[in-house]
Length: 135
Image 1 (cartoon, rainbow, N blue to C red):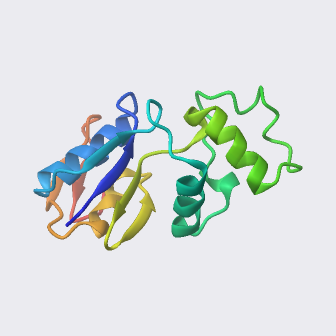
Image 2 (cartoon, helix red, strand yellow; image 1 turned 135 degrees about the horizontal axis):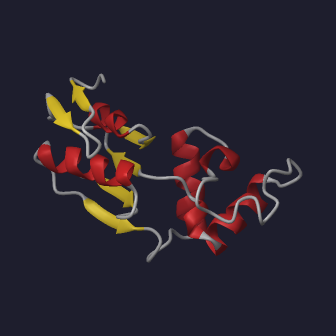
């Protein structure tokens, strides 16, 4: 199975998701999207595959979200995508792509439904135990 993760190594949720993928026996393509942001076309594809709006993919915490005035509903999806391309930290993560679908894995255990051989249990960095995809 091919697995791709749009990953931020500074994010605990992203690190937990990557660890769950690897413990399932898969070695994913890891795209550190802050270093290698997706193209506009790819970001549009991901948003469509996720079945969400561009606004729903925006990350507020630890980003210039407020400073850029992104709370204002006046911004169109195209404009919000422009902001995400200019400031990739605005893209929420981790996004995982497999043959089973595309998902924003927040919380990290949402990745389990995308894997052929998900782990039966997993201990997150904060000590939380995930069993069979349930916390």
